Image (cartoon, rainbow, N blue to C red; front, side, top):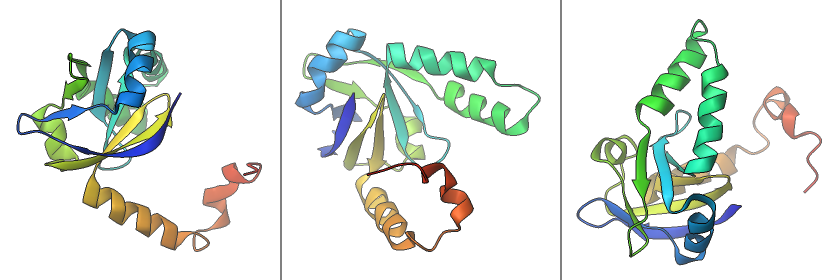
Length: 152
């Protein structure tokens, strides 16, 4: 289970060091094998341990190619999926195309999201986070109906 927030640097080759607190879990769960792809909902990336990605692939395969939204989601997530592996220093290489999509240059943030990580350009994350926080209470109730039973 991945949770938490970390600011990270991207080196000149496009490598990101996974925070050390997650490395043993990744090694145990996935033998250091990961899959990185774009997030079709936001300008960020999703990073999955390989076994979690395989579950996502099964769910994607079950979606209809005759439904436009389903087809686009499959095209984006599968089409941009890249296998990667933690190196001896706990780094992964983020492909240039994915760095461009998420506008990741030197500074990024990584957010644990349970079965995966989200990777954001640091400035984009801060703006998006602040926009979301400002909009709380301004959105229609229909968009938050799924949260009605959530007790925090």
